[in-house]
Length: 392
Ligand code: SF4
Image (cartoon, rainbow, N blue to C red):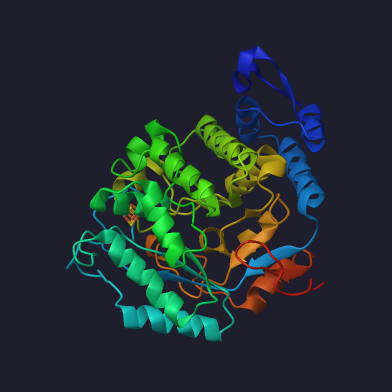
């Protein structure tokens, strides 16, 4: 089918079949083409895109679906910011506010290691009181040292670009100084959260206090230059347009191309984080007009992301927290090759009313993978195999 002119640039018609065939042959999608693909509504066109994303996934990474055994630790929900989608944050002293001490963090991390976790994923709110001798960086360094002293072999996937910017701002340091010091004491990789949608007009509504799109790019580029792998994400399905999604994809792909050309580390994976608004602040929730993600919209977005990122970002993960395990399993037929981690606990999205639960077992993850007839393989955070491939 050919899409109408308003859906492509320069008034050209986009022939979806030709376009998808070319992408499978290695041509890169343009932002305008991605916008057009994200906008299709005819079931036969949606199926063509799904099929192409599935074929490209098979071409690039094969059949196995990977998973990681990890534990999520959100060490505090006290946060100075007020993102319009966030149900997690609290003011200090408010009902539901918490701030874990070192003993609680060590207990959670040790418990996770005993359950076979290879990774601790740690992020938290931006708590201005979190300092040691007046320094935010010293507080974060101590957090890392606390875990790494107990569990030197565990992979620590920690601190979003927003947290890096917060530490740098609090202590008047450069991003490079913060990342370098965190890396030295044991941060092994960083979650590429806080990206939301890297379009200033969207950020003004979603997260006006957050680091800017430019700063997010600067933090991530700096991390890549310093040898720190980072994931990348998009908070989709709120007020952004299809063109905004395509622009976000373009920023991520360009950044990845630049980082890899320089011989730096890059993005390890792309994760779509669909908006969940059930318990989130009302203003944005009313603007969006629904409480839970639209599965079909998320699936199409993941398929187009796979096609757009091509060989540059080979690993794509759906969020079972947002979509539920069944939704995440369905996404494995829409370009995804990884089902994420056990997490063991999750607060940020579950406090927004997500229905995905907070801690599937390894058997649950493998069951979801088997439900789509694909083999499973445990991986490390950086996609190295931990176990043999287990066929269904
Ligand atoms: S999303 Fe993060 S930075 Fe924004 S209010 Fe919530 S905890 Fe704070």
